[in-house]
Image (cartoon, rainbow, N blue to C red; front, side, top):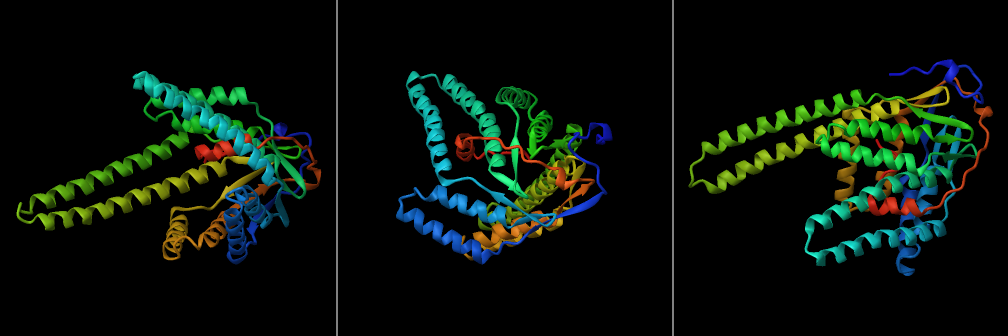
Length: 362
């Protein structure tokens, strides 16, 4: 892990006594539920048009209830921005779908697949960088706006190269691509005039992936071996018993896969946050497989038992968990942070919604 030498600190960050800045979330599920119901009713009565304003209301609630160092965050986007962005993104997305339909008549599925893959491969980095630019420009803390100052071309080339190498190396290059993307996005993100940064090593992330892959393969081999041994013990006449036996071993497989996925999620989250810094301060998360698993299990049960009506409480529980397990430690002079506003459009934000693309990897 690369340390942060004093000489690399931005000139606008004044050294101050080191302290720990905690994050808190003050929202309640009941308030968010009332917002959810109103958004749903207005969306239905406006034939879906109000969806974008409802999305803004939810974001304003979530961001406005988050606190760091005693000050609240804020979200300043508008429903009209999202609506116009969605229309532009839908036109772009629809063009690719229309191209696919036209290519189906050529009788060359290989060409069709290549064109569609290239189309979506190009949209993903554009959506990711555009979404980061829009969301940060509409977010604030202590009344000071966030911003993203990166350019489309270098990130686009970085992403295309990363996708190609990840495919050629059968996934081995994925952690290198993820770290490059994270580094570019964080290094060009700012709060006012103070920059964020990322110094994670892709080799460390690769070890995390390899360790979990090996654990998953070994677990799968063990379950398969036991299942086949048990099946051989059963006679052909015991077909129903054999099916029941298969179900019994299918459940442990799902549990094993889920546990490895949660463990990988926790390790990746620790890796990304623990190597992210802001000015002269560094983030730290205490997320573990155990506490993340408890969060997921309870949230899943709440969702199933209430048929989805507990979604607002699930959102609140998740944000409280995120804030409780995240701190920022370092010597920061908060009063030295100055406003440095940037404009951005919502087109790529909505394109990211179409493609289910996160603004920041990890």
